[in-house]
Image 1 (tube, rainbow, N blue to C red):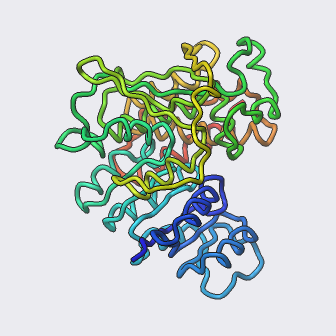
Image 2 (cartoon, helix red, strand yellow):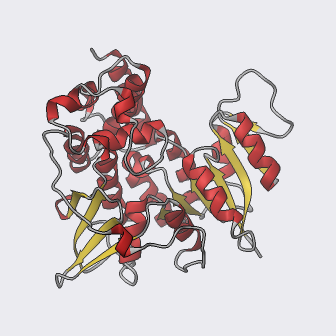
Length: 384
């Protein structure tokens, strides 16, 4: 019997990756629900290929939808709760994915999570839902998948985090360094949109590519690692690794370090999340050739050149609504950068100002977090 998957964000880069992976393993997996944000044409093609039971379009526009399609943000929740979906692959971009993550976990499902913002904004809520329902979260981000693969046999127990671990001294999360790794600080401040979108290693959507350029994505990943595994912030480090071959490392209490290596392809962590804890035999990704990869190098992060990283990690340490404010401020600042109304240097400036003003807002429950999210977006939209 095949395992049913609800794929949220089917037309984005992760969604398309998941479709390629499942196409090689139709004996094991099938899509029972598909949603997209607004790309009707791409969603229609996916529906024709997979014939899912449920289809939803978050932003349908004015044209009539095909009969039976859901619409609006409710379609994400409906897909996440689909009774035939054992796995919900959440590839929604941004804080909009939190509601679907909570719905799926509350329903006792596995969430294959590519929406790191769910844990950044509502980590405590997801943890509570998992404890109450028995649902689980398995990461899809390459860095957190790498950590999980290094932690084989070390996940479990009653410790903090969604996937509590024991005997770990340190996490080392790698960053490619993005397109500005070798740029001087002042040059980075004046970077143009085309510069920020010219990622040297990964092909991703515009928002995540800009996040990679600013290292905002690494701040989100540090917070996500803390929520997932319960490792304290002072034992999570970020290092620059331009080859993007080593995806993360774990140092254990005896000083031994394990690293997960592989070609830079999101197909690997997607398949691992779907099959976890088993490994599914697959030949779709090129084999890693250590000789061709040649030297693997590591560099310290230049925090003066990439202030967004420390802003995000500091918000995680602060807790409460601060991570939600950071995430929303970053999303809105990046949207303005993409639209041409904010400079690249304006991204960390806007985020820092939003945190100074709003980080102490209440963050005890979902309404409070959503209110903090909205306040941060409004603040950054008006930031000058």
